Length: 198
Image 1 (tube, rainbow, N blue to C red):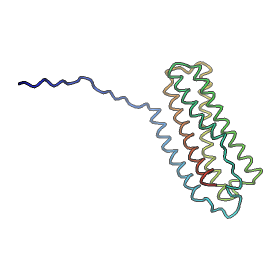
Image 2: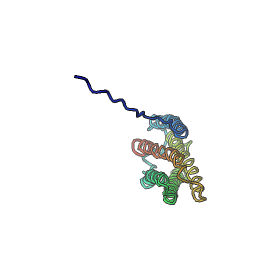
Image 3: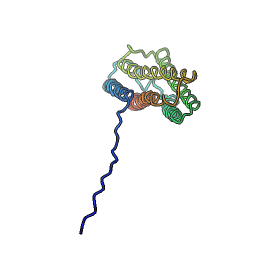
Image 4: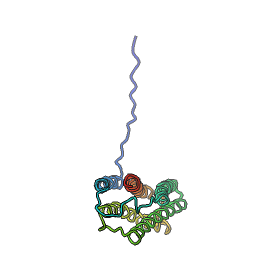
């Protein structure tokens, strides 16, 4: 009794190189994560070691609204990229603008908090160890938010001028990856500064 012939499939899985932009952004995020880790560890190490006041519990107020704004911007930028991939350029511009608005609200909230701490509470980067580590960590994050907002504003201007199309979705997605990173870092910073540190 003969055995049935073995069927060999001709289908071969094709492997595509990841985009250079995505690889570059992931490398940048890895490097920036290492930097943030150093600042977070320094903040945790120096909690409660200040010889003079003020202390975190005396001057810090939890920025719930502004945190909600920043975290919501991860959703809006996701919907923006999804819209562009589906050739809905108008919807993309709207979601992108909302992302810019939410990010700007967050940055304005950080500036408002700093103004209160400096002028009302007398806390500067030179006041004590808390001031030094606080402004260093939160300032580093604010810098990254600012860079992201500049990039988002640039893309929005190009979109309003009609230069952003579906074929640019991959590049826009790479920028969205950076913005998601900024949001994720804030979750860590928020937990360290406003939950553990108080």
